[in-house]
Image 1 (cartoon, rainbow, N blue to C red):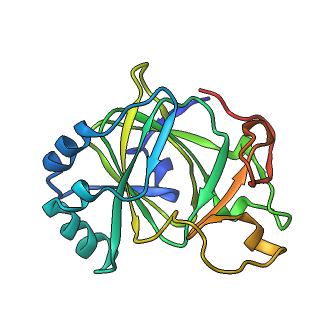
Image 2: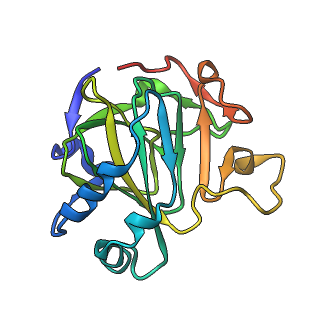
Length: 204
């Protein structure tokens, strides 16, 4: 699979590179976070949210709405699933990493998605990007053998446990957490997930 760059024009349908923020404190704070052999996702980290940049992100990138700052760290080489939100996600790459991305518009009426439509993008260390709400994404993939650390910024309570009733049919069957709609590949064996990815479980 061709690995493109987030500065390429081809990335513009999925997101944008964000400039104008001093990321040094955030990068330093991420040094304390774990780097496991698999993947860990923490939606909200109190120490990261206490940094001055949290207020800057909230005001400038989310229009003053409450946000959470967490991280997705580890080692991963497979697509496994795609998810989307009703809001943009901001990522800060602490290490070089690769994102596998698609478009929500390509999900069929049966909620399946052809993995041949996925594109891969390198996000270099020190970069901040916005991933648009209509962009399908999941855990980053390794760009180097030592793994990755990635800051994840989203509206507050995203990815927390669902505390309300859902319908058994329609898009509700994709909802895996608050503000998180998920389509999995059957090979990933994600418990309780809707298996709608058709084709290869892409491996990098």
